[in-house]
Image (cartoon, rainbow, N blue to C red; front, side):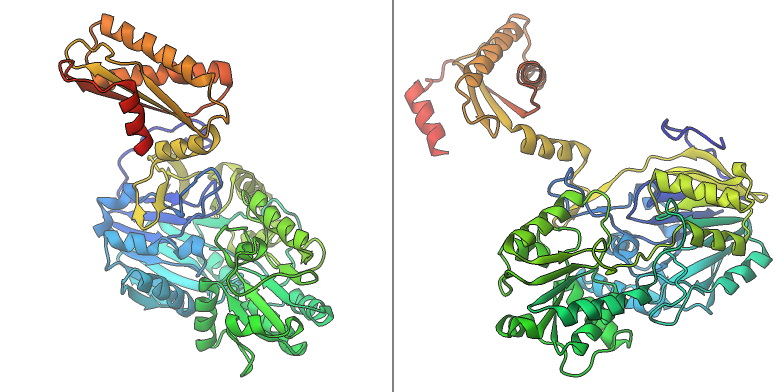
Amino acid sequence: MQGADLTKRLPEPPKQQKDSLRIYALGGISEIGRNMTVFEYQDEMLIIDCGVLFPSSGEPGVDLILPDFGPIEKKIHKVKALVVTHAHEDHIGAIPWLLKLRPDIPIVASRFTIALIAAKCKEHRQKPKFVEVNEKSDVNYGSFRCRFWAVNHSVPDALGIMLGTPAGNIIHTGDIKLDQTPLDNRPTDLPALSRYGDEGVDLMLCESTNANIPGVSASEGDIPATFRRLVSNAKQRVIIATFASNVYRVQAAIDAAVYAGRKVAFNGRSMMRNMEIAEKMGFLKVPRGTIISIDEAAKMAPHKVLLITTGTQGEPMAALSRMARREHRQITVRDGDLIIFSSSLIPGNEEAVYGVMNMLSQIGAEVITNKEAKVHASGHGYGGELLFLYNAARPKNVMPVHGEWRHLRANKELAVSTGVDRDRVVLAQNGVVVDLRNGRAEVVGQITVGNLYVDGVSMGDVDADTLADRTNLGSGGVVSITCVIDNRTSRLLEHPAVSTTGFSDDDRGIVPEVAKLVESTMNDLAAEGENDTYRMVQKLRRKVSKLMDSKYKREPVILPTIVPTNSDVLMPDDDEVHASRESL
């Protein structure tokens, strides 16, 4: 099944061979986010990462999208450990929900990663079982041997994994770049990867985020000088927006503020929590007296303050978005303020981000992005860096992960260019099952993997149909229909009541037309002897939807209600019905 057309659904995978390692992703392949990969050997399982994906504008009312735990829910008792590569939300964010299925799963991670997971789980009143590891650790969980190597990324303490199994050795890069001048002096350990290559790497799962960009990525070491220049030259308040876990970027911002004689205030709950943890653990160095509260910052002269905030992706409730809308309780952005977007633009968020930028510019603030100055460096290696990884590891088989399709295909070509046989580069997507056996990785089938939505505090109560209804509510409005019928003959006892919401400012022509169609349809159903209210509702929905689409090119949500009643009961007149509806 190698080279299978993944635009078509593959068959169910066969029963796993006893000497094979089975691998499948429940999230994170053919998308960027909610990374979670499952490894099965005989009667044991190991999971790498368990993150979230943030919703797009096409998923209204959704807070988070989780990996689909369905395929492993009934065999969760077989999981020996959850191994986590680093502390970003797309790798740790879904852990509290996984632990609701089984609270005692050992979580294996580095010191800083554990600290952020623990803080997240505390909000869910969970106390996970942690196992702290570093780049020198060597731990065993059943048939799985886990060794690690230092990886440079945009968060401290990131690790790559060398997973040893009876079926072969697997390298998982996690998120990775080859920064030659990292601010923490902890570069990616290529010699360690090369030593693993000497042992033999049967399969390499390599991240693909920037595989389509040639050359090498900018160094995090380039950012501090830019920050220092921009902050020193600013005449009023400076606001730097960045990801809440990017300790290196926050350190550069603090250093620039100290150099320019400014105080620093954090804004955003996740930013304040993460930086407090980073400072306590020694990853963030802050001179005494530098940090002030947001309330104190609001009272100080603007040229004496630098704010570090969340909201780089235009999230509606993030601090920066509220500032742009003039809804922030403490901070009012003014003409002449400097706003620095120190981040990349995640695909799908363009409209929201540009909207925030435009609102800030309308106020009179100066907005700086990476196009105007070197204020951001990606945490993901470019194509040239991935070539170094392949040459060091020398894998027999490759499985690109962590990317959309264009990234995965670009990564495949990189692997092939280093000598990996084209037939041994496995292109998969969420749910595609890959078996490693006798030194060869092959696609053997596909399991059903969907989206698990978090809406408020509930998980799984929202499905694709619900989201479609929400989208239609926003774009097409609602047409409500009420039919009162005789419970014996199914004939209408009064004219259908039709109303619209969000469909048109003037529904005077629409309502009579829909009412006429409904009355005709109900009369036909009564003549046919139909007495099932469910089938009546479905018939009305189809008929009215067809009218809306053909005549008005709209797709409103159609809400028919059938009310069977005894015709002997005295029915209210039209005025009473109208008065009753007005009071609702």
